[in-house]
Length: 283
Length: 272
View 1: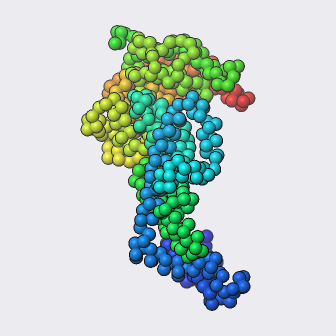
View 2 (view 1 turned 135 degrees about the vertical axis):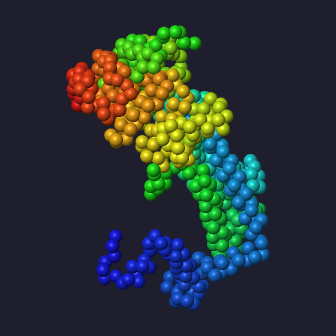
View 3 (view 1 turned 60 degrees about the horizontal axis):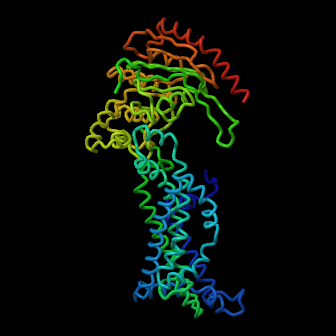
């Protein structure tokens, strides 16, 4: 689209476009924190909603104090044990959930009778609000990391499972027939046709599942634990320390982004064969 | 294994009836009482109107589809399971998109347990033969349609099949690329004569490539209705041979045999 002729040359260059998206994204973030700061810190604006000037800070926290808390956590190292526990739970849930989803998804997709047999139960398990299992897992596996991993696994498993299942069913019949005629045995078909074809579906689901593994870990901690970032947040809520709650949320968000980025990196390495949009390299 | 003098491929009185999975009443007989015999080293084209079950016949020959009646013999032996003597070139994309061109060509050797080094060496050789030397590292989506066809051709021919089955392999290509590929196919074939069954809807393509052209009736219940021996001299250039009087004569004959069937097939698709 062309800019209308009336707009100034400066805006035409500075407005959001492909070259400067990063700058605009950072500006949006800064604007968000500035707004948060202005609206909550007592004394900047006259109270317009709460009757008391300090109430806004009580309910929504103050960004500077939130950052101070995060700085304190990382400078004193207080947060590391909690963070490692949460990350460890997430990674375990992610790996166990993904591998079991992959194996069972492949197995069921290649066994029409078994899959027809299990179909209603899989649908039921998937429809069930699985977060409700957390208290049961606490009873079964104790308050340590195992119960959190179990919750994460139930969340991750179904996403990967359904994607593998779909991926196997979407294998091009021509590619499959061709591989058979070229002499592939059943195992070779699995390794060279079904798994690679399912992998593109699995990778599409990994972004969701890494997020859900994190949800499993934090919700599990929140419901009962003695370590982890979810535990820190729960403790802070108990003393109405809203700044620490927000600090915990920000740290979790940042690490979720890091995990997601790692998935993207792996995906780029393993999925080079997939055409990307706009890629026109041909000969 | 092969009895002397037996045809490379003999489809005898083949009938293929498809039954809908949910009801036994819905039946569709694609091929009825079709017989097709291909001698060793013979290039046979099968032409027929669209939707007449040409591919069905080929799927029976390669063992992907079991006929409802009739027998398939490969060098005199009854076919059981997949036809291990045959290579198959599909009409649509059949390359594994997650493998590079080179790895697609080595696939068959790899499945047979040939060591990687030797497989790569032979695949490089085949890529060069189909004019793709130096392009082996590309993935299928990075190749043009014509190049993907060449990779598929190398992928099939590297296994040295005694029978090559081709299902409209060049129908998706533009006419120039197509004539180039046809000439290359003839060159590869004449270097090492294998039996070829070439399915096409294009009479010109059929005549210019083949020793013999078989015309099928319109479906359903397709069966051969005519056979024409192509006595044009070899080696041929597919672009030039189309201009010779004998070619035009053959073309006229085959078209006359096919015309009614084409109209029948057309009428049938219109009613549905």
